[in-house]
Length: 144
Image 1 (tube, one colour):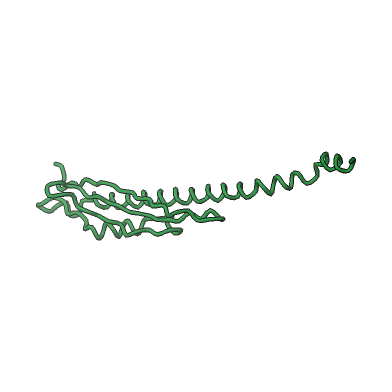
Image 2 (cartoon, rainbow, N blue to C red):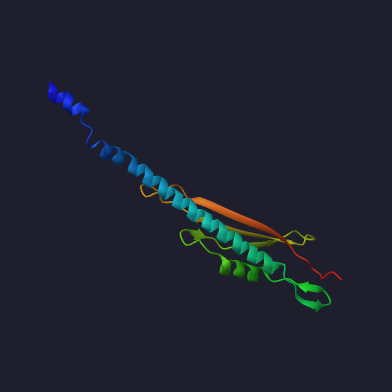
């Protein structure tokens, strides 16, 4: 009977068992924090690229022409967005879209989408889509 009581009071190895239970959860949380950081980096890269595309769209080329400014083409804006994006290596960066506003409206809508599948070491989650859009108003003439 004294052997059973001795085993009940013996605490050696308890820390090992506690660590074996807690370590997978800790590793899962650290991997999740890393994946969220990757998503935020991609979002920052997309916002930067959209800002560069918007900056190009608002430039006034040939301001000395009689009609005012000549606006860059949608293809040139899309190329600028593609050149400036960063942080999207772990997922799929879709082709940016530039759409003109309706007739009589002087704006362009710029849009990009990034898709990634977070990998949490033990399992993969469903794909996450991040879409960023920006509306850019275009000046057609130089104020005098």
